[in-house]
Image (tube, rainbow over all chains, first blue to last red; front, top):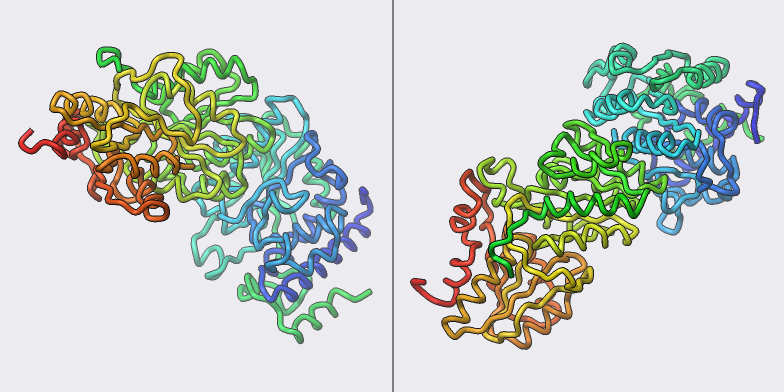
Length: 274
Length: 311
């Protein structure tokens, strides 16, 4: 199920966005802002880039994906369901007591989730471990992880970055979702992680900065990352929090809030119903 | 017990790791710039490609080990107990225990018996922190033979383990062919005047006390609680029924450790007074290990003193 046309990828990203909004609305809880900002990247990862098999989620040669910014799990569940890892109806039980879709990724409950995350800064370390194991066993798979630009304020991220460079993890691709907002305000206001590119570069990464909503740039950066040898890659994706729903865009209050019925209908209208 | 043959459990750990490395090629070892102290350097010398020195960055070390375990590796992760259970607690909780990953945390330098380095390096809360984590098996071994067994045995469990090891050299208690089982305590002697529950470095102290008491006509039994979780409930109930007094002694805060774990069982199954000996809710301090055990009241003499006044 590989999609190569950017037009089709864009459609899939729209489906992911709709599923995100529906999940958060149905659960009346969740994190729409940061899920929407990574929707385009998730569409490319799950429908073009990742070498995975929805029929065999634990295939040992598969590419790994770790959502280090685990609170944006609605985007991951949407991608997994659309890709066929589980029934799309399961999304209606997101965050509910009788469902398996926990509020943050749980690898033991959900097929296709490669690592349980939620406590920020920890996913990248797990990704480093997976990448080292891949090298050790010459399995040839790649490991991808998405971090938030607020998340990289965690010290563990930089511990992990050091180790990724030490072990020359050219099979590791770190993507920073640079939507410039965290709970208490803008990145600059709260605790600036800028300049992100210079930081990762000085930690031994090859760094690419792209528009995280431009499919050509996402595809190109992921292709480029595979050509880099002996060091890990960091793709800094400039994104818009809440992307796709105008009243949510760049609004920090949509970090962790569910839309009411009126807002839900309005949001779905922007995404188009079919 | 051979009082003249002393080996620190960290040393036994390093040696056992090398043997395990030969038997199981999936075993990988992590350290955080303390390999000469934790003795993982013995493994590193033989299996350099399976040894990962993650530098002074314990949080990432735990997370990296977690990630590697998802790919079929069996990581043994070592640093001082204060950093393993304390500094990296959240990583142990969320990245290892919550997903029930197969990571073996072998933490050395636990307790006041670290000695001269003082309070910042004397971990007295690790048993408490680790045993409240779901999925975690918690062990604290008492001698060379038992430690070597445990290091290999925990590889057979599929799930996280915290193995508490010590810096202090302690007597070899067991014969080579002694049988152990995870979750089953080892009873030493069958005296009925009291049961002395001990773990790790305090087991040898309890055995020494047992011998002194015997000279004074007081017959006690010692129970080596090498597994703190799952705790041997059957043994605790049996001893509560068979002996007059119950005492626990540990190189750990009296809150949350061995004594607390035993008290929880007694409360549920066989209510009886338990005298808990340990570090009395305070931080440690610098000094020689033996001096500190005496100072904090967890040595042989302190145990004997529970029975004989002005001992």
